[in-house]
Length: 87
Image (tube, rainbow, N blue to C red; front, side, top):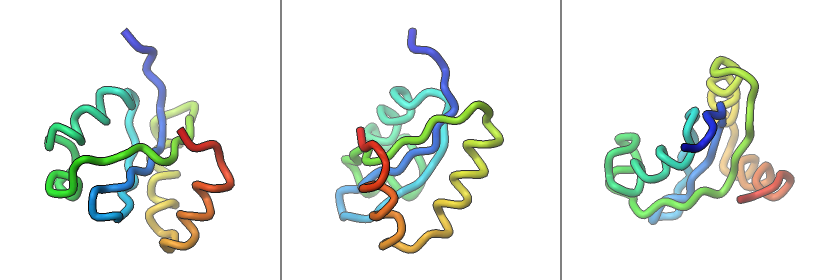
């Protein structure tokens, strides 16, 4: 079983849009998204691809970072993905 980690992540959806979320089990969350059981937004935009990931110490930090990223423009999100390590 994989270790639980608090992460903020971005997905590229099949229509090219970006989705931002947080989880403590990225593998399970990706499976859920691609099975159409993830966020309402991604259900009709599968398959999705993980394009960005940040690890955090706490759930609260991951959730806070998710909120920050959601406020960024598309251009700023793309720049963030290029600046940081992409999985």
